[in-house]
Length: 326
Image (cartoon, rainbow, N blue to C red):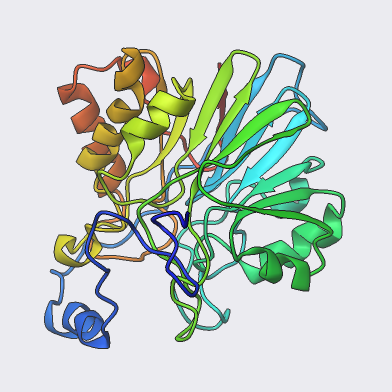
C-alpha cells in the first residue's frame, strides 16, 4: 500500500492539508504588494564561546552547539554529528545573490572535530548547501549521511561515499544510536522543476536513556503528538521558531513561536513530561527569509514558554557558537 505522503507516479505531499500554493502570483503578492513596515537596523545575533569536546566528547556527554540557523554540532558521547550544515555566506544557488548571512557561523568550519554522521532534513538552500557539503565530504570523507528520500543523488554527486535515504518512520542503528526519520509538514525544491520530488523530514535520536529531536522545518499541527507517542519523550528538542511572516503565506510550512512551543508540548503530552524536556530555538537570527524582525522569534517563544508555565531553565536560547549539555 502506498503511504499517504507519496504521490502516485512520483513525488511527495503533506497528507491532511490542501496542496500548497506554489503560484508565482502569490510570491509576487508577498514581495511586491505586501511590503512590510520599515525595520530598525539589524543587530548581530549574540555570540558565545564553543566548548564542545575535541576531538570527541566524554562517554556520558550529551551536548549541542549552535552553528546558526538549523545547523548544530551534537555530541553524543564519542559520536560527533551535524544537522543541516550550512557555513556559506548565502543560502542561495549562487554566492553573489540571495539571502545573506547576517552573523558569521558560531565557529569556523575548519574547527569542527571529526564528523561521524550528518543529518539532512530536506533540500532547501538554507538547509542543504553545496559549498558546505563539498567541504565536509573532503574534510570528513568517512562521515555517514542520513537523508530523506530523493536527497542522496545530490550528496553522491559531490563525493559522499556513505549515504542512505529514508522514508518517514524508518529506523536504523548507527554507532550505538537509534535514528528515526520523522514526518514533517513542509515541501522541497531547489529550482523550477523539482518541487516536492524529494521528501522532507525531522529526526529522532536515542542513545541509552537519552532522546533528542531535531525538527527540521514544519508547519503546525503536523504529527507531533504521534512522533512523541512513538519515539518520545525527548530530553532535548531542537525546534524552529522563525521565518513565519506573512502568516497567510508561511503558516502551512513554518511554525510561528507560539506554534513551536505548542508542538513541543504535543511531543511530550503522551508521556506527561512537558516540564522535563529542553526546548532549543533554531531557524532564526541567521538569514533574513521572511518579514518578521530578526530578533523577534526567540523573544516570542520565550514569552509563550512562560505563559505555558514551563520551567525557565529548560528554555535554552543559545548564542551562536554556544555549547550546552545535560
